[in-house]
Image (cartoon, rainbow, N blue to C red):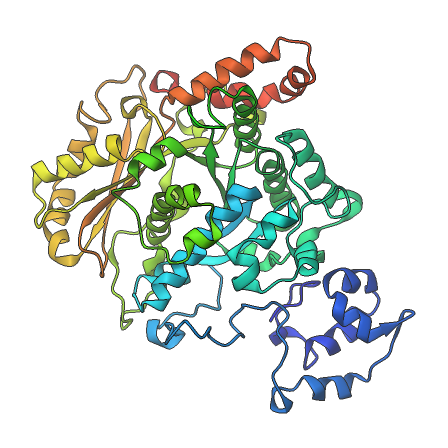
Length: 551
């Protein structure tokens, strides 16, 4: 257990339990105690004075006298759920799941879309655990921590995170997951990104820090993770407006500024599709998309855009089992989120093996890479006149393909590459315009033996670099097209998969969004004024897309 005020674990307290710790270490911080531990404050203080005997309270909280109440329901101190027979244990995997240091992600789902996707991730993890699948280790070893945030209390109440993972009441959600507490009516932002921006800023006004004071996301765990992944959309108000502010505040208020190299921040973002209610026929969604991507680009290192149309097209081929998803995700979005979760699972797996000891029951082995290895910063390949104050994030176009054959030879590998880069693109882009890419081939040992030879001999890279795919020989400047291919043997799979991120390709949907927003910017409406205010972040991002913009 950690104190949510000072972030120290109970092993570093001078006291036996949380009540005693609050009374001795934070007695002079009663506003913080009232905000973070409302129920405890009411029984520990009256008119500013303690009303309990710390020794008596410690005896009452002793597990030998009864079940100890957990601060956050659903954490590791809770007993396994009745429908979760024999979940994997730390000893079974030989992994210290309680230690967050160095694990891959701290994931934060912001707004309705982000809440739904994080729910899908947690349900996928729990599906693997309930079925005693060793792949549960991917998430157990890859997630340092996670949390959700929203302005809409009704949406929060409907989440798996609130109902099952944490067991929160509405009042607890108001404290632990609401953006802009006390600054609005706890509904959505009405597709107004500027409103989403304002309510997030309100949480940090006057020296406030909701990470320390009320949100259930531990600052120490944020610092421990390899990287932070924000999950959100840019079509409406909360995800589009709030997430860039959140990312910037995490850099300024939470992360350790003593590090020479800053922690990687990434954004998995759902962009407006060309069809549907939030499609290209809706001008507001396009403007929000441009603003959200541009502002996010100024706050994070890399952005992974997902297009609902492409997720729907890829769904039949890469749809992992996620029990209960239809109950917590709207029906249509449940189907879209399956391939998105499959992509994130492979991304998470790419460095999970470092947490597996040699005698573990799961044996993922092969090449691994950290988050920073999945992309190249824009400044590496952009002309030197790039304004350092407006260095944009790199766009990572997501792909995930699957080969079902019993053997994998060169011809079948070419088919797999085509499946990933064309049929299973999870956003619309042109592979031949990418600056490069990182790829991961993974599958069962019996099939990976031949795949390993194709990777080691350079065949896999040659296929990806060929004129049918990245066309690496055709680029206008002096910079090279970097292509990195890694491999993993993964038990419990029947087929071979190709996961990848392609850096800064041209993306037709983004270009149409940009052209629309540029026209709106010349007008005299409030929307035009808002666009002009952020345009210094728009141009750097959109001017980097496409191979012709490399040095």
